[in-house]
Length: 388
View 1 (cartoon, helix red, strand yellow):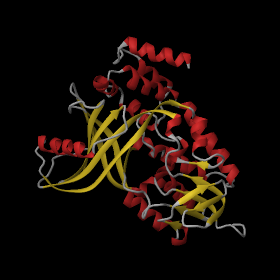
View 2 (cartoon, rainbow, N blue to C red):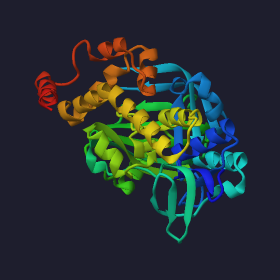
View 3 (spheres, rainbow, N blue to C red):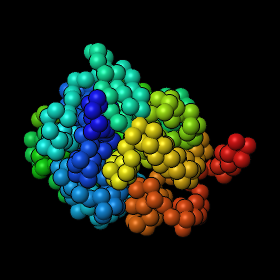
View 4 (spheres, helix red, strand yellow):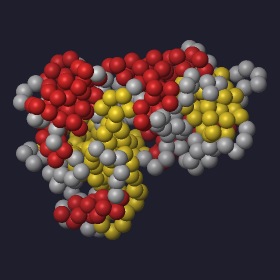
């Protein structure tokens, strides 16, 4: 590290994207002085991240394996016309575990919490409390840029960890229970069995609007549990949020909105799955990509991550088309039909879809057959695309 600098790489934002980059650099580039800066009191916030084995390349497993808190060898999906068990490992990471692993991997002087940032440039971070951090390069991973530059739907949710008076009887996670009443677009319930008498239940919606009524969703979780005979003794952690579902937008304008000339990662870089809003697969790949860069100066980091995120945007036009079909062509209370048909397809295709690595054959298979949306509405969406 050159004299006069506080660190080689300053990472602003200690959530999943920033935390994984810090872990990757600590492991792969120990000669670099890395500083991870987080506004909250802990790293990772209050989150539960789940993923399929196929979401993470074998070469990158070393990065996520120490973070895994729960693992199941399969999961279920439930729809009105069929139920399906899909094999393959499904895993969950908690923000508490991410925080603990970061504190084990990096020395205390390289971790700053409760540190709010006013501004970041390619080589400096300005702190709200006063002061400045100088670095060879800066990566901003604080969360979204100006979402007004993007055309979005939303996957919004409320999840609660329920403590039950007796065993729930679930062997596998239920990734989608879409047998529930369809409200506010496409609704499903998500269940993760943590122990015999403890499970995480999340009420989720593919909705046109971002806002959610936590009280109402909480009541629906209680009703869902009661309908299955689960008696709730207490509630542990609770998580609520809205993930962006990407229909379109201006990538360059969005990138600039998060800080012109500054390297970015995570949602701030547009690196999330357009259809699910999930960012873990991209966060893992981005961390591995950054750790392999020879030049971590501010300009080089910006150029590399801008090109990386731009290439991902270009490669994912198919998912944005599907999202436009789901949100513009499908009738809101019939969106379930789209997902129900999707889950009849080959499990390997489904895995590649969630990983954001669908092949050309996958795309043809998803679009073939009787469409689950009205033809006229689908054609109208396609005409809009041609005019654009």
